[in-house]
Amino acid sequence: SEAGTTRTALVTGASRGIGRAVARRLARDGMVVAVHYGSDAAAAQETVDLIAAAGGRAFAVGADLASYDGVLTLVDGVRAGLAAHTGRTADSGAPLDVLVNNAAVATSGGHLQDETVEGFDRLFAVNVRAPFFLVQQLLPVLRDGGRIVNIGSGVTRIALADELAYAMTKGAMETFTRTLANVVGARRITVNTVAPGPTETAALTARLAAVPELEHLMIAGQALPWVGQPEDIADPVAFLASPDGRWITGTVIDASGGTYLG
Ligand code: NDP
Image (cartoon, rainbow, N blue to C red; front, side):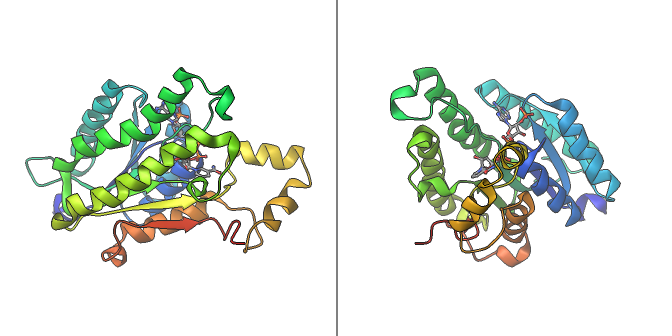
């Protein structure tokens, strides 16, 4: 039956950017995708429509991940959506195959001296606390042999003074990845981080248009000669989510085109 064969995924922060590319790619691989968004319902619907236009299946779920209540809202929405779209429920076998923790905030004070307590707490709430409790709440409905992929960042390796607290959240997620992999491994669930370098989402497209020499400067710091695209991140996520990724767990995969290799 369909309920037994359809693979499913939740991608947080899939209303735009890298999350949208991941959602589209997993849908292309045949998964029913829960497209999570924080505030931009119209953008999330656009992701759903793009997937539908390509012959895939998806639905949108909104939740503000800055609060713990938002995490619970998301869990409820995903469970209801998966039941409606696949017939798979917690009772008929774990309905979720893949969880991609992508949603994050990058903006805050920046430099050490400019950071505020509120900004710091928000970074850790969205980037660390939310994925932690999302995993806690979704593990019972994640099938054995399922996948967890966290979107990290090259900033755990490349020290950028103006992204200090943000980088710390990504460091926490790398530790989460490694330890969680050991916790859930007996269930054949893998946990990995894909760590992008600078990637051309809308903000970078605008900066590239405003500062013509930026593209050359970026490429000069990379081994590979193009500006990273959301699809360049989505493809390794899809690999980890596929059966081919079964023996890889607890790792960080750098997807930065070889940024600052030396
Ligand atoms: P965007 O800023 O383009 O999109 C962020 C996504 O997260 C949106 O879907 C947004 O939803 C959601 N989101 C933000 N805040 C919240 C919140 N409080 N509650 C719920 N959802 C929220 O992100 P990118 O595509 O640039 O980045 C995606 C991931 O990749 C992040 O983990 C980021 O740290 C990482 N990364 C990105 C790099 C880059 O160059 N772009 C480089 C390295 C890592 P909505 O808009 O609906 O509110």
